[in-house]
Length: 63
Image (tube, rainbow, N blue to C red; front, side, top):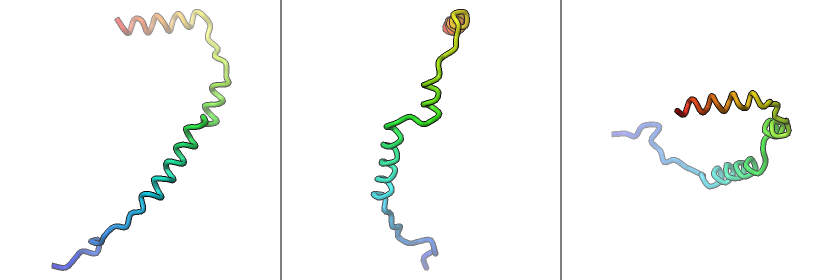
């Protein structure tokens, strides 16, 4: 029985690829993205009645 064309040993260089992903993950986790930064700088505009409405809605869902 002859071998199939795809039957060959795989050469994997996972060390280099894994190191690159780890570097990207480390760099990304050190700082927030530009959209997150903009949202953090924005002030929340909620009045007291809206807060009460949201709280009571959540309270009703629990019970």
